[in-house]
Length: 349
Image (cartoon, rainbow, N blue to C red):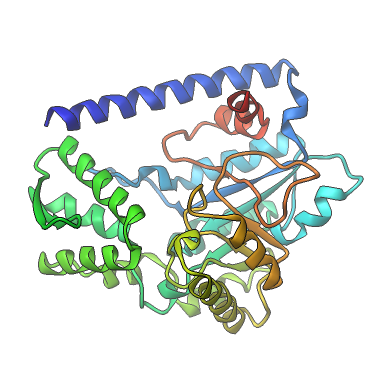
């Protein structure tokens, strides 16, 4: 329990330090310092967009923002002189003579609340957006393990899990213990064979009366929902693999199959081949130069990571950084600071 409490304290301190750094970057940006760090523009990453539900245990809170914060972000960028462009237009924007900064909005995984809460705001302000489709979620053949794990730990005071050396019992009675268990299982999923680890988690959840596939159905858009979304001329669909596994950890054949089959699935829904791709997870080491080459070979014009940063004219269009709209930092000062590029420039020094 002491280790779990220490972890929670460290996380709180980390968030406070990040918030302080973002506030400082905002001051520098307002003063006109380090203006070159802004680059040509930025791509923003969203996941859930929905009214906040208070949950005692909420390990995925960073993956959701409120509709109000999204609207505030759009308005703040407008005041900052940003123009909103479709993600597929980025290669042209990066070499354009138009010096106005641009912003793109992307939503990963295809959650139902994207259609219910985010799309009306994008329509109201004329903002193009791209939803990245995980085909296994659309077809209800794969599960969102982080949502399954959160639901499981929320209702259990202990959980048995096999990390490769035999099943062991994880205490999950307190919030600190739940978070420690979540972090440990997540690390295992990222370090082991991902498909097998997720299957094991799904089995444990099912034994406790939790249906991981029902979670997928409840949270993500089906084919009809995605078609309803792209009835909006501002919307486009991008590919996000079949299984949402880290592409860099797959064999060449598996990686090709995940990328090409997901593109075909999106084409079947949208009626046209997708021009954009998002790497699942998107951070190093879940993406590799091999993967950049593969998406280029399959004809994608743009591929995005979750490595943080703004965009420069020389950016690799198949390894573009994005700025996460993080549920822990729903403050327009923080958005302005991130869009300025100053935090990324300072960290790189």
